[in-house]
Length: 352
Image 1 (cartoon, rainbow, N blue to C red):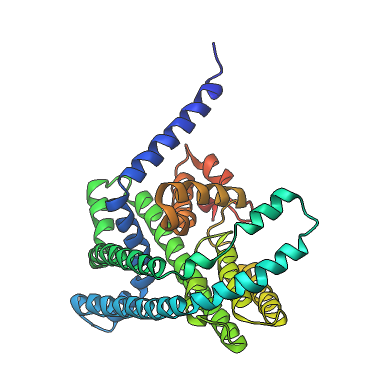
Image 2: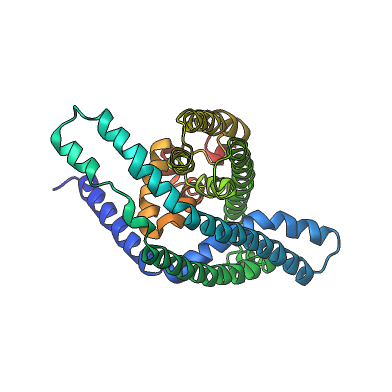
């Protein structure tokens, strides 16, 4: 007879692929709902505070909606103005790349293999300044912006209903499953508490990181400093690789913008040091091991959810995986799996 464990492993792998494909197919509806669930964790304390002040639920929800709308409007305003500035600066960047940086690279790599030198010669950037390319870029950006707005509308609708019905789900569980109500309510409470603390903490840390990056870039006079600060805030939600994007784009623009080489190098050094200290020293100390996940599991979750839901999946990969871990730890049958998913730096949740 074959070993049951040998049979189980490929079955699990096949099941993960099937689940991933199903989640990808249901993405248009399921993703906005999941995003709304996690956004509601961020704004739930505000709704709770307003409710304690005897503010009616309807007024509290409208206040949250206005706040989120104002934030989205500010992001859109910065993005639109920055895109216009970027379009205006493209000819200048292209000229510097074609006339100075690319010839410098070719000279520096003059002793490199012929294949590498041929690849360098193909990196000419003159076509990017054509009017047709700029128009196509603007049309693509406009279409993407409309798509994002429609998605945001659905997310906000879901979020309002989730915030408005908070607390009712626990009551329904106690009625539907009276013998297991305490256990199920405890699991849901742990998931809510963990994800709420995670998203509030990481949002504040990313906001401060983006503000610091924007100030540094403004001090050096780098173009589109506000856009790069906003980008830093957004991409740092993506674990492990987000900070690389936050560094690469503004540093690349600095090299294209300035005639001297010392300023872009200084920008690169300062931003890299700040990102390293913030991401590797300050943030871990402030947040601690809030979600207690294995680093390898975080990387695997990042790849899996990025494949399923794209950038949004990367942002949500850590809290989704944490929810699964909490649920597994809460059941005696699956508790060992939940423990294996942890970082090993804290006790299992059932023992705390």
